[in-house]
Image (cartoon, rainbow, N blue to C red; front, side, top):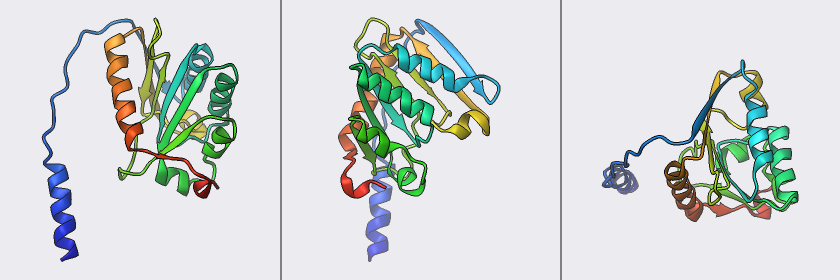
Length: 185
């Protein structure tokens, strides 16, 4: 009986009506990097350092001390920094730096709804004149720069793309669970 109810639930979820996303013209600039050949981590840290008002993060995993330090520095200079991360990756990885971020007054939420919250996204200055969307396969880890073959795309000054990513970030945030003391390592 339990199997029947679970399989019915997954079937209904899989058959939800899906929308076709809009297509819109490209704007602004695009920068692409490939690790391990390009200094992808430096591009991320430079973009974080240039943030003026806000950084919204969706991380599958965050173990890079340099990226975490960049986020902490941004928070300390008054930038609104918020982080969401995959709950299972945080629980299963001893090097997760979510606790460090939270200790430095960066609000953290865990995504628990999905098998994998596999997003790797930074949104910078979403409502500013020069918004930035950073995405790609690049995990926010030391290994992504030094051991893996990864890609990173940085879109600057594309308002419609930024708005679409920001709307998606907010949708995930509403479903996420605040990081609490019981989840800290």
